[in-house]
Image (tube, rainbow, N blue to C red; front, side, top):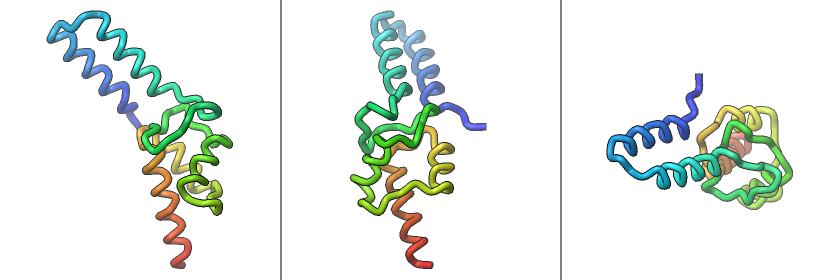
Length: 110
């Protein structure tokens, strides 16, 4: 079972904050940042190498544009890569682009 790494880190962070008694305002700001990081609109948000793949990941035209900009005009989704993306919650889009490129090298070599 995959554990949502971001939320585990967030829970640990809240525990630490409680131990050192940081103000509620700081906790609210951290909560907003975690929510911003986990709520990606794959249709509209700007996607870059540091965008983290979330549970809500979808293979949209916006995502396709990102991959074409990183991997070239020959980029296309295939079933195996789409399954890899769905199983890669917590991985960055930059790492996903590298994964696609490495799969292409293997395919080209065979």
